[in-house]
Amino acid sequence: MDTSILTQAHERINGWFAASARDLPWRRPDATPWGIMVSEFMLQQTPVVRVLPVWHEWMRRWPTPALLAAEPSGEAVRAWGRLGYPRRALRLHAAAQKIVEEYDGAVPGSPEALLSLPGIGGYTAAAISSFAFRIPEVVVDTNIRRVHARLFTGNALPEPSLTAAENALAAEVMPAEVTEANTWNAAVMELGAVVCTARSPKCADCPVLDLCAWVAAGKPEPHYVPKGQSWHGTDRQVRGAIMGVLRVVSAPVPRMDLVMSADATPPAPPAPQDSGSGTSTVSDLSAQQVNDAWTLLSSLTADKEQREKCLNGLLADGLAVETAAGVSLQS
DNA sequence: TAAGCGTGGCC
DNA sequence: TGGCCAAGCTT
Image (cartoon, rainbow, N blue to C red; front, side, top):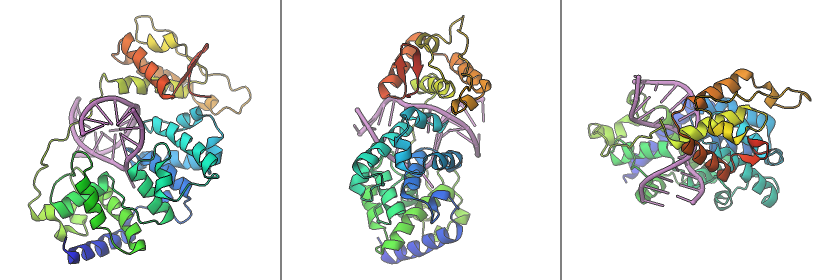
């Protein structure tokens, strides 16, 4: 790698970040390691705009790992809302418990300790180390991989799955100086998120347009066809619809109601409990939400067998529990 | 290693 | 309209 190219890329991309980065709450000086960790969990496969309101609510409700750890995991799953991949909420809750038990309630600063927590893999461990503790780990996410693929390799897209070569390249192009390296991690990610996007990149706004190997090569097409995610009729769709019901009801739902909801004679939708004590957050949820979730579940073209399989999967994953009264989130 | 795992906005 | 895509992790 040409060192003068690298030096220019460092200066320009970090300069661009300083001038035009989005003002995100987990990037502010008052952001805590816990707040940054929560944001990293939520941002796994989920866009910033959808994370923002949920992150604020979590920080208001659970400003420390100990406060989250003290609640049932079902509360975390419920508060996860519609961010998707609710297992992340379960793992974040479990991670908070481990932080309390093994790290005295403080998010650990070492990449190795972070990696030992549930739901934290290579990317998230490096990201928390760099963003929260200013340890210049090599951060490699999908945005960074795409920027590297275009700017340095000359490809339209990164490889289908993370390769050793991509990791090596990411390490090679990191600035040597600590502060500059940490900024670089955030800056390249930001560039990929807002300028060097997957579809229709905004090259006119790019601070390294004239350095870009992909542009120099005439923007060749991707060297492979990305395989799309199917959705209609999948287990994921059914699981999501079941979770959608469980999130908005306050009482356990009989197993057979969940399994048979699409039949010719669907059972009545479960009604929300009366608020009574006034302390339940569930009581704030409207009957409309319950009705919508139930309608969605009922509308799916899934047979009894698939519903049963999906429900059992959710129970096996710990996203739901079953008692004599029926199925509910963990409480 | 590849498949499985939610959700909603965008073009 | 519908496939594509988003700060991945786990098995």
